[in-house]
Length: 223
Image 1 (cartoon, helix red, strand yellow):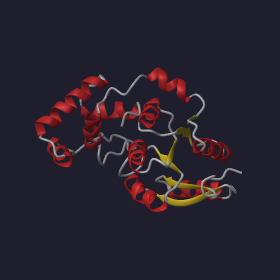
Image 2 (image 1 turned 90 degrees about the vertical axis):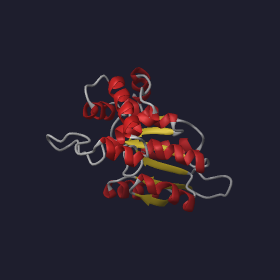
Image 3 (image 1 turned 120 degrees about the horizontal axis):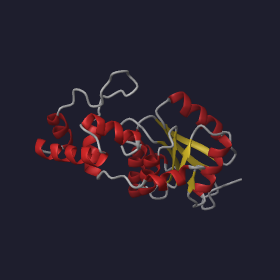
């Protein structure tokens, strides 16, 4: 049985995942482990930090793609504000770019979440013990993919350009209806600066326009 030796209590868990049913099922199963206690569940990335500061979890399980803030962005936030909380990223996608971003943000683990709950529980125990955990096959894929070529500001601009997009809808174009002025206003930048960032991102992704750049960046897990 794994206990926090400092205070003799079960490992405290925070879940951040958008689909409530999936999050609830996993939280319920892990909550049945004698050495684990679910102390918080949130459905949006921009709610994680406040909840974590209030509940002081030992391990935060974060989805890669969350409303408000992404899992890797939240991981960086937690590392800065609550370094005692270890982060385990859970994803349905093994895109190498997500793994690299998560590790660069300070996450202690990265796991594809369609595996058995025993695998997730074992990863939590290892992460809490100070180990780094990466799902089978993901490490080699990440090393082969190379680093994310986009700067943080270029990622911000592409993310803003993609706001409101729904890639699963046939014929939908990412960023459709979002103007340069909209992006500039949201990020407090000048329109000229936004154009420069978009141009750089298009060049680095080897695409022809910002919509293709958004798709390429998402496909590689760079956003």
